[in-house]
Image 1 (cartoon, rainbow over the protein chains, first blue to last red):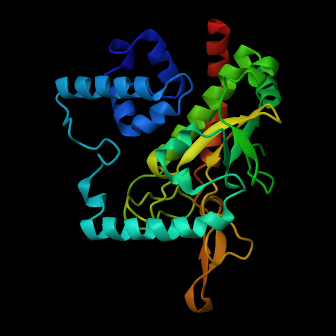
Image 2: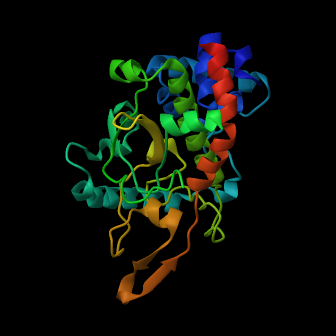
Image 3: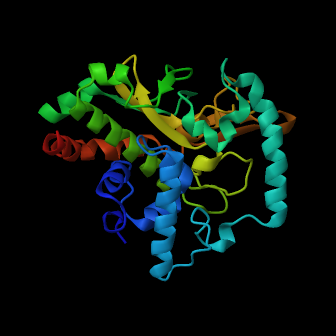
Length: 139
Length: 160
């Protein structure tokens, strides 16, 4: 189901710019991904997510399913794996603290990181400049 | 080649917000629109290229996402992931995984995402060397985005 049918034109447009055009896109990406979009705050993200959940429910989808983990259950973690992951998470957190740039904190793991102004990116990052985009347009 | 991360991005601080006055002052609205679309597209494409599967992916293919492993996930925005933002120093959009963890045992201290993207040699237990082939997930997304830029310019022209 398309977002234009259930959201305000403004919100639907903001989400479309972030490559989310369907209810499935929103449920798959989750609330945090909504908050990461410029112009959408936590409250609006909650409202949009709830609207999409309701729409999916009306549409016959399983509203209780975790959208992020909605792929085949065989790929999901077992309880043992989840416990192990939680412990590894803490260990990794301890490892990370020394290598985080000055001014950054372990809160990087927390969803509130979406509100941070600055992040340090890995070297796998890619970039494009306004100048290059302009040249491509003119080519 | 555009988009190769190179050695210059580590430590680059990226201001994510496209609506700050400083950004608005030197970027016209159409350019902002296209830069923002690029960031969102590359982020989404890279994330979706990482399928949730057991075991490693084939060399040359995007890495598999393993739910629950290690607490950090390139695919899951709740546990790290890929972000995009404006590099205000260079009037450009930067998209990439957070540099939150360095791979243990790499000679140059590469981060996990970097080893995945470009491959690398990691010293494991008992001095055993593990060779990781490249499993690119950012560069293919960047290449796909270049094909879309004309469409984004048309959108921007129609909108502003």
